[in-house]
Every structure is written in structure tokens, then in C-alpha cells.
Image 1 (cartoon, rainbow, N blue to C red):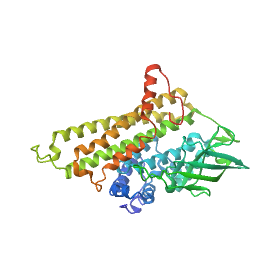
Image 2 (image 1 turned 135 degrees about the vertical axis):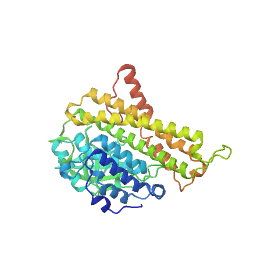
Image 3 (image 1 turned 120 degrees about the vertical axis):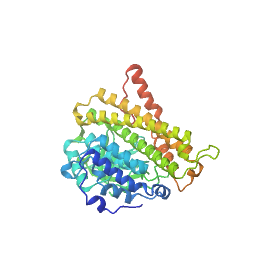
Image 4 (image 1 turned 90 degrees about the horizontal axis):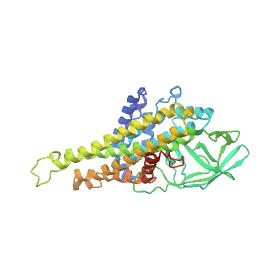
Amino acid sequence: MSTVTPTDFTTRPAPRTAGEWIARAAEAAAVLATDAAARDRAGATPYAEVQLLKDAGLVTLLGPTEHGGGGQDWPTAYQVVREIAKADGSLGQLLGYHYLWFWAARLVGTREQWEHVEAEAARNRWFFGGAVNPRDQDVVVTEDGDDLVFTGRKSFSTGSKVSDVTVLEGVLDGTDQHIFAIVPSDSAGLTFLDDWDNIGQRLTESGGVILDGVRTPWASAAGYVDKVFQPRVYNTLNVPTIQLVFVNFYLGIAAGALETAATYTREKSRPWLHGGLERAVDEPYVIDAYGDLTAKLWAVEALADAVAAEGQTLHDDPDAVTARSRGEFEVRVAAVKARATDVALEIAHRIFEVTGARATTTAEGLDRFWRNVRTHTLHDPVAYKRREVGRWVLDGELPEPTWYS
């Protein structure tokens, strides 16, 4: 990676406003963009890149200011994810998932638990990973005195080797109770398989993980008091919150594709030899395509920002979240997820129409944008997101909280 020296960020004052944090993210993204195509081809574990995010202070964005965090909200976090994803979709996903797992203690934990986790995470600049895949129901949690023991396997564990701590999830033996706990990523019995080999999002460290008797104190079970879970409706905001993470790194990837393509068109594309024009940027079909794609991107970005602001009102008062307010928010998230998916895929595909045949070289790496957005948009079927919106429009049906809705 082409790096800036750590002092470029670490000796400067931390950003204070949302705008300053977004500008800091854009600075970090500019560094990440310098060799993004080569980094994607190499597929190496992004230790240096995650360190850059730490040095820039971005990993503590949501943390309390009194412990060195940025004290920012989710709308700002989403825009930061978008900025990083413009340069590198994998790093945008890693940072977005990190924010989700950082927030997971507040999502399901007691006040004492989340205050402790957030303070420690901010002070130590922890980078979070998560071994939480709801389709894998094969991690069993057993009791051993004052400890919990996690045993099983997850097929996905985003963040794995680049993380400092990992969120574990499993089902308490003999019950249907899910337990979440945060453990050091170098815990005994925690083995990352390094088997992520997909066409896109290649640097997300999303391979499988084996949990062979990973131990943690019962007291670390998020939201449990005297071994009994304390439920709130707020606990169910995990899905709309992470789906907005998805939306924003999709939009970041799309914006990065469009910006990279536009630079190529200005600097390298040749006009069609029978078009009678001297510059590719004067081709009417090229101008029309960029105008069309930019208008679509701007529209879905505006919707994403509006939905993020709506969600922040729920985060601001967790105890006031109701089944209805949660359900209406999920419908709005489903709508923007559907649009972001379609627009990001269209942009990542159509940039080749306006860059030309020579832009398909491996060295240019323009294909990484399509591979990245195509890979992750398969996370859950977008048709089911449209269905959530359609059922609400037709008969007022709100989505039932599940791992995917």
C-alpha cells in the first residue's frame, strides 16, 4: 500500500464536527485509492490499511469523547463508510461492520456493559470483527461455573485476522436463547480459517472460523443479568442498522466507480473514429450516460441520508422505540436497500460503456467495482426487501423482526 506516515494523522488534532470527520475519511480514502487495483489483485490481509483507519481516528468515531472517541452519530458513520468505500469497497465494508459490532454492546447490553466496552474500545482503538452468521446455527454455548464456553463453527467471520476483538454468537445449550459476547481475537480456541476466496470484497477477511471451547465470563454475555436476558424492542434494530451499512458502502463503491471512470474518460478514452469529435468527453452518448448515472446516484444518496436521519431519532431514545416505529424504519431501509442495489450494480456495469475497450485491462482494475458490489448485494435477496415495502403499501403490514428483516 502507498502509505502516509502515521504522524500525518496522529500528530494532528482530532476532528470535532461531522464535516471534519467526513473530510478526514476522504483524506484516508485518497491514500487507499492510490493502489487499490493492485491491492485487490494481491488479495493480501489489509493490516496496514486497517492501521491507517486507526491512525486517522476513524475506528473510534462512535466512541465517547471522554475516552478519546469521536462522539459522532450513525448518519456521520454511514457517510464515513461511504467515503472509504469509494476508494476500496473491502475497507468500506470492514469499517462499516466494525461500527456495527462496536455498537452491538449498546444494542443488546446493559448500561454497565456498553459503557465499559465503549470506553475500552475508544481508549485502545480496538478494531472489531464478528463471528455472527445467523444462517449457521451450529455454535453451542455451554456453562462451566462462572464461564461460558463457545464451541462450533461459523462459515463467515468478517474482520477475522485484522480485528483486535471478535463478537461471538451462539445458542445456549438446551435453550433457544442466543448469547453475544466480545472476546479478544487471539483467544485460545478461536481459529480463523483464511478461506475467503470470492470474486469480490476480497480483502474483508470474511472466511470461516472454528470455535473450539472459547471461554468468556458469564458476566460478558450481552444483556444478561443474573443469567436472564433483559429484552427491549431496541434490540431488534440490528437488521435495519446493518442494512444501512450495506447501503452506504454500495453507494461508496458506485461513487468510486463513477469517479474513477470519469477520470479515465477525461484522460485516456479516445473518441469514436467515425464520430467526428476530437475528445471522448464531447461524445453525446458519453455525456448522457454520465448525466444519467450521476442523477441516479445523487437521488439514492439523498434517500440514504434521509433514512439515516430517521433512524438516528430511534438511536437517540432507545427506550422509546416501539414495534411500530421499528417496523416503519425497517420499511424505509428496505426501500433504500433495493434502490442502492440496483443503482450500484448499474453504475458498476455501465462505466465500461463510457471508458472503452482499453479500460478492461487488468492494470486499470475497473472490474473490481462490479465484482465488489455484485458479491455483497447477494447477502440477502433484494426481492424480499421490495416485498417488505409492497406489503406495507398494500395493507400496512410491518416486517416481522428476524435476522434479515
